[in-house]
Each structure stands twice: as structure tokens, then as C-alpha cells.
Image (cartoon, rainbow, N blue to C red; front, side, top):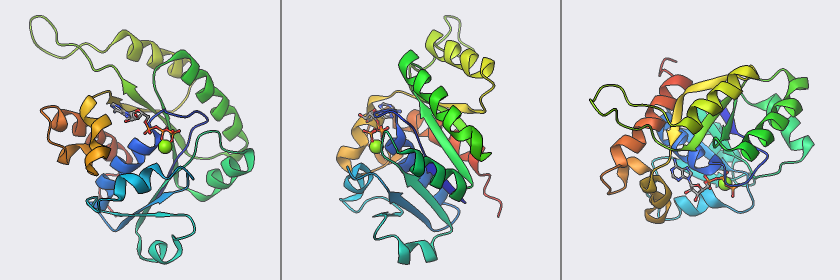
Length: 209
Ligand SMILES: Nc1ncnc2c1ncn2[C@@H]1O[C@H](COP(=O)(O)OP(=O)(O)OP(=O)(O)O)[C@@H](O)[C@H]1O
Ligand SMILES: [Mg+2]
């Protein structure tokens, strides 16, 4: 399966999503993460050699691609129209991450408008979202107002959206410093943070060939 992570804005969780989706997909087959952002954030994350999948830049991807069953591409912020068209035509799925902030959501709606002509398969992912709160008496947790409002807006706009939300945890933010995905990062929130990506992975790909 070939997946591209795309967004008009910077700092919306593209690279973090790409790394964790790649880690999930690696369980089911050889996975390659192509870092198509000249900043090379994914390549930096991989520098310690601790990630369970290959990461390369576009120029170095040819040989790896032949062996890969799954390709995840991380893109730069503010892509050109031509780049959007190219990825819209090449990939099985485009993931559009967005934090639940007004400005980020506005940029997301613009991305949607740019994709409309290509009839591509895309899905919005809420990222860097405040985690749900515990109910006073226990039971199911209460989603944050930000998450609820963002989902309402996305539904009104009839945008396809993942049920899974990627919540904001410091462990996720720190994991690149150790060169690992959050499940391998030593922190009491690692497991709960990884669960977000595991849920997302299940939604994307159920492991059946
Ligand atoms: N689930 C999360 N919890 C906490 N922090 C997060 C999470 N996801 C991303 N972040 C943090 O948010 C910031 C932006 O994330 P990331 O680098 O993945 O975004 P990006 O869209 O790739 O940015 P750029 O456009 O600069 O490449 C980073 O500091 C990252 O650690
Ligand atoms: Mg990035």
C-alpha cells in the first residue's frame, strides 16, 4: 500500500504521523518511508538506526522501492500545486493531518479544494489534539471541546475523517530525540500514546493482503 502524508501547513504532525504509520505497516511487510521534505526531519529521526523500517530521500529511493511492499511518503509544508497533483495521482491514500485549530482547519479546507479535481482517495486525521478527560465517576472518557468542535466542522464540510484521533503527549514529542517511535520511548505515557497510532494503523490497514 502506498500512502502519502500531505498538508499545506507546517507543524501539523506530518512527519510524526509518517514515522508511526510506517512502524505500524512494517509489521505486515517491508516498509519504506520516503522523506520528500528537504528539511529531512524523518531522516534525522532515523539517524540513530533504531527505527524498524528504511528511511531514504527521494533520490535514494529507487532500489528500496523495488523491495518495499508499503511506501509511506512524508512531504514538505506548502507543496506546489504540481506536487499535490503528482501525489494525488500516485498514491492509494493521502492522509491529511490537522490539529483542531481554526487556522489549521482553514488550510485543510484549502487542501481539500485543491484535491477535488483529482478524485483521489484522501482522509483527514486529527493530530496534536488535547487528550480526552476522565469522567468523575469513571467510564468512557470525555473528548475535549476542541476535538468535538473540529469533528463537527469536518462532518459539516463532509470531509472523510479517521475515527482515530492522535492525541498530544509529550512522549511523542520527545521520541525523535531518542530516534525511536513512541512505543519504544521510556515514558509512562508511551503505551497510551502508541495506542493512537495503533488505532489509526488498524483503520488504514487491517493486515490482510
Ligand atoms: N501526537 C503528538 N503529541 C505531541 N506532540 C506532537 C504530536 N505530533 C506531533 N507533535 C509535535 O508537533 C510538532 C510538529 O510535528 P511534525 O514535525 O510531525 O509536523 P510536520 O507537519 O511534519 O512539520 P513540518 O511542516 O515542519 O515538517 C513537533 O514538535 C512534534 O514533536
Ligand atoms: Mg515534517
